Image (cartoon, rainbow, N blue to C red; front, side, top):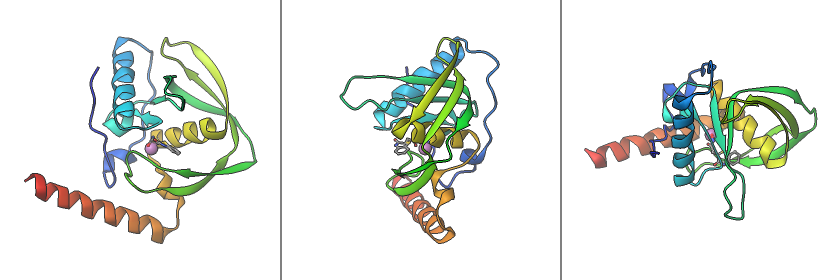
Length: 173
Ligand code: GNR
Ligand code: NI
């Protein structure tokens, strides 16, 4: 397993549309292992492959709280059903470090996907699980949570992130 670098805004890679995986083999499982390790190291609760630069429709998540690990793996996820009722959650993103904002999303959804073994599964999600899986599935379409904010808020965040980026570049060089 290996910890990979998480790509942050602004970066065009994050806007790519990820490609479906044809089957879940050892290469995909290795990628999922690396994604999970990278996510745990960054204290995140979810990670899409594109966040480490791999444009495949693969997501890992772990929303458990009690310190007991409960990794979840989603390959080629599809939303089957989403509730009209919305819930608001204060979201963050490892690709938008240190910014948080409230986002409305469907409160319940059903997701069909392939698991770590390549088996077809259906998950009925609500609460944080529903919020997180929808946040991750947005990454597969090149969408970030800041895209739901006002233009002004979004521009301010991206500006600050790019400023911070050029500063750290200078420090490193
Ligand atoms: O770690 C994360 N926390 C989080 C909190 C609220 C809603 C969504 C998330 S996902 C985020 C990790 C991440 O960026 N996944 O793409
Ligand atoms: Ni994210």
